[in-house]
Image (cartoon, rainbow, N blue to C red):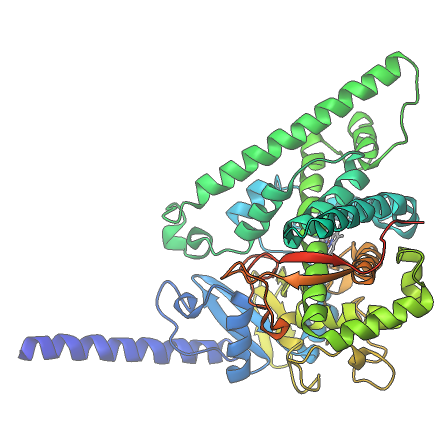
Length: 508
Ligand code: HEM
């Protein structure tokens, strides 16, 4: 009995000394405040829930707008206020212009992607090329007819289902639409990558213990390795087939001295592979990495934002009425909303901003510190991982009145968000990040998402199916707004609806 007591007191006092030492060492290192109960080896990992941005939001409410934590042996800081977001992403931009490299990211992005490449010559070259040839205003406008076609197919599907009163999985169909848009813009044809994309965004957002705890560097008891290889195999087979097919077409065109079809992004990249005189050598692996980049960064995010906006409007019939009135006044009833209408629809634009505030599809901007820097009195060491919690800032009552209420009016004249835009200069609203590493797809998304949402609500009402009972939900206020874990923050359950046609949805 006495021995047990001795062992227990020894254990407790060692733990106490250890915790005291940890707190002291953080103070000593001038790190931002940290939650207590940091354990040896795993650090704060035992405190993390499945939805990381939500756990970190709770910590920030308790310990302040800039905190530090240890995910295993990796030091992290979390910024949850516009002030610190600006300090880190703008004032110390050069220190935070790289991203995390995990086993999954390295393998699935061929260690050569735009989104995860270290800041340097290759990143600069490929970002400029993507902006010039795919995501700049000229290309976006050139590809507008492709997006209109995809919207029309989606609307026709809804109209057919409305006639037969059938349930549509809106989540799946939106993802199909955005997948087709990116695929046609990049590859000139529709390639089905939805399943791989969801798998990749999920695995990028999960914690692989061997990435964070040095002791388990070589151990894979969560089975990540197999999942990564399965996804890699599926994607690589798909993209290899696309590239081979295009190489054959190019050879044939050359033989026949024919110009063939108009050149798309894939052709431009293959030209670079053939022309080895350019400063940055582009190889097959870079094409694969970029294809992965655009599929993962550009499909899920766009579909998720459209779905969240639609859900919020169905939940709030007064706002839906307001949005429809605006559309009816500006566009009328004889044609469907198009991208060119968006600048004339301020309420629709406000709905999109409000969606990004409350449901940012990428909940946290994640960067990695490449050189030690000082932020106010704190010293942030090299290799620290940075999370800027945009989800948390969207819920901050010091910035937004009644933050949990979905109220697009806050982005109109005299609202607290009047004149706030989403292009990385207003640090209270950063759905696309900020600075040099900001999202290059912002212009495309800000044209595509409002036009798509506008067309949907103009033409259809929706009866939402309760995912638990499978029956029509009578109380729309009860539509579920839970989230699913991952790199992006989609709704926890697919949106299943029976569409009801309001007006004919054929394009003019
Ligand atoms: C609603 C739609 C979208 C949202 C909310 C979104 C959000 C984001 C965010 C938060 C980042 C990180 C920015 C930072 O670190 O500061 C990012 C990066 C990126 N996004 Fe998007 N995105 C969207 C659509 C797109 C589209 C349509 C594309 C391309 C077709 C795209 C391609 C990329 C790429 C390549 C990066 C990495 C940029 C770099 O590291 O330099 N995104 N996006």
